Amino acid sequence: MKRKDYTGIVPQQYTGTAIEVDANIELKNIEEARAFYNVAKNRLLQVNNWHHIAGIISAKFQLMDANGSEAGRHAARNDFLKIDIPGPGSKEGGGYDWVLVDMFNEVNDGEIESIGFRVRPCNNPFGTKNEIAHFYSDEATSNFIVIRERTNVIAWVVDNNLKPNDHAESLVDKLRDTAVGMGAITLFSKMQWQGLVNGIVKP
Image (cartoon, rainbow, N blue to C red):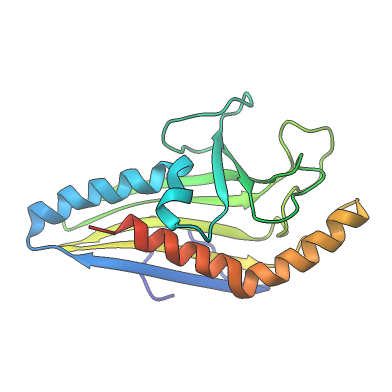
């Protein structure tokens, strides 16, 4: 791991593939760094804007609350993200991939500020089957973090334990999850997350 996880949300890598990307900006002084950290933090938590931040090579993300309503606020623990990736969507997911925000933490000790949240593939919470509606298995996590270390502000994404979802009931979903999962591991996810972290720390 290139960066220090002050939030404690990133799990150990123990299976499959991992992806790690980051971007940073050095500010002139502590005051400017604190102000820009708040800008970066807001960009991180406004999940519905990620498509615009990350650029054209990106899925579209929609924050959903526990009642199934679209939410325009910051992401929080126990929210769901409805993901529209380029190409065919999950049949079980209603044409989308789904993840749950299962961990959220923020720390501030003066010299260091950091905020982050972790998502994990889940079933379609508003569907009828208890089946993972994502091209990755539920062992996989994506971890989204912003850090301020004195005058340096960092955006960081870590995907751990990436394995295609091979438990889908639908044959179409099985073929999709294997094909999309393997492709995303090597190309799409890394390009998308690099675009996101670059956009989060863009002046």
